[in-house]
Image (cartoon, rainbow, N blue to C red; front, side):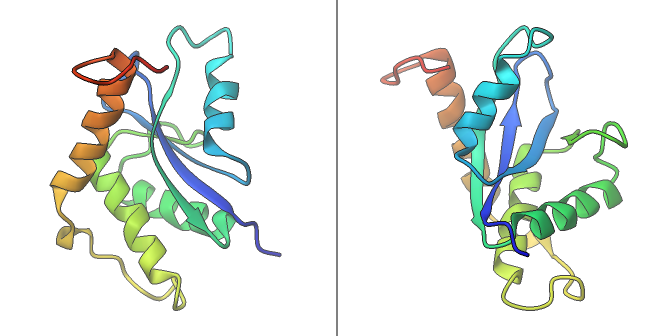
Length: 139
C-alpha cells in the first residue's frame, strides 16, 4: 500500500551542517512543531524543503539509502545527515523525477541541478527564521 505524503528537510541552528530528512503523511509543518516541542531540543527546527510523493515510504527509503551511500548519515538509526543542503535537496528532486520508472534500477545523477535554487530556499528560510530584511520573523 502506498503512503501519499511528503519528504521534508529540516535544519536546526544548534546543529550546523546537519539536516533531518524524513517523511510524513500530514502537513510537514505539523511534524516540525512536534519535533521542536521536545524538551531535548533547545531551538526549534526550520522546514527548508518539502516534496510531495505518491509513495513517501518508498521515496524515503530510497533517499536515505543514497544519502547513506554517500557517507552522509550521522547515526545508523537516525534520520540526520551531514551533507550539503543543496545536495540533499537535489537528491530528493531527482528521486521525484525518477518515480515515473522503477527507481530501484535507475541511478540518480545529482550533478545536473543548479545549486543556486537550493541555496535560495535556504536563504529565504533563514531570513524568515531570523526576521531579516522584509521578512517577518517566523519560527
